[in-house]
Structures are given as structure tokens and as C-alpha cells.
Length: 202
Image (cartoon, rainbow, N blue to C red; front, side, top):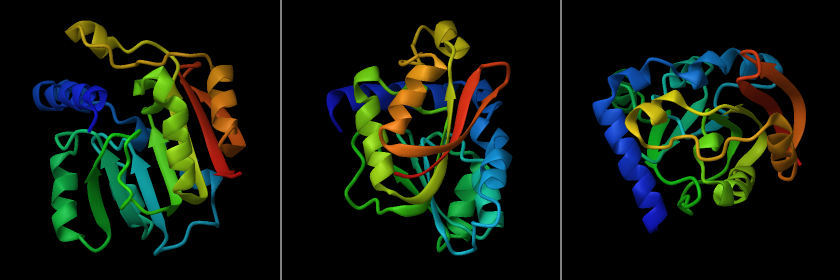
């Protein structure tokens, strides 16, 4: 990894190891029903999904319940919940974990039918956002879901390490995402805290 990516990994290694409260909220798990509802009737067992910036990856339980083959991607190997680590062993044919920086994805990471990316893009340095979106778009064969926090993070302020590196309004994110994806539908949830959208191939 490049030096900037290594610095980000070191930051999240510390957070995931030393701040158990950071696991209390899992936006990916919270917003899964919106993703499933938006593509009702189009999801089939055996299809593939990549969760970019998976964090705890608790949402993987919902993906596995749908019969999807799951690839989890995160910059820190310490992010995964223990239950998910166990699933990696028990369901190794259906779920895998790839440690990677989202602007330095390995060539071995193949495309998937679906992509999922919740509470992640605001953590990316602004100058890397387009690179990350382009890389995700290259790996999405049909559709996916983004959820982006529009506010400063509280945990980063507490520990003196900025976590949300790109804090922008809804329109800024809408413009960025529409460069690489067709936005199928949008939701602004939690009183404007998040910008959520379902996307399809452009």
C-alpha cells in the first residue's frame, strides 16, 4: 500500500482494536432492507455481492440468508465482528474477506452482480473519491446501494483522528455518483444525516 493508505489502515486498526463502542452502530446492517426492497424480484441465490468498506460486516448475515456469495473488503483486518470471522470459516465457499484500500483494490478482486457501500465514502480523502467510485463501478455488473453520511463524525473528534475526510452536501455526492452509475432512486434518511441511493450500471 502507498503511504497514505498505510496511515489510514493504521488509524482504523487502532480504532477497531481499542474502541469497542465503534462497533455499536452498523449502518450497513441498518440499511440492508432498503437495498433489498429496491431490487425486489431481481436478487437470486448464487449471485455475487461485494461489500466495499464492510466494517463489522454484520450485514453479511443478511446477504448469506439471501443465498448470495459474499466478498467483504475493508482496509483493516480488525474490523470484522467475531461472528463474521466464524462465518468465514464455516461458509468458506460462500464468503471471503479481502483486506484492501478502496483506492488500491487488487486486480484479483473480480466483478460482482451487486455492490454495497454504506457509511464508507465520507471516510475517503476527497481527492480519492472519483478513483474509488470508478473502481467500484468497474466491479458492479448490475446494481448496488450507497449510503453516505453528510455530517462530521463524533468519534473522530473524541480521539483526535479525523474519520470523515469528505463531508459534503447531498448534491455534491449525487453529482459524483452519477458520473459512474445510473441513480435508480434516492432516499434521505435520518433527518438528512445520510444520503442513500440505489444504483444500476451506466
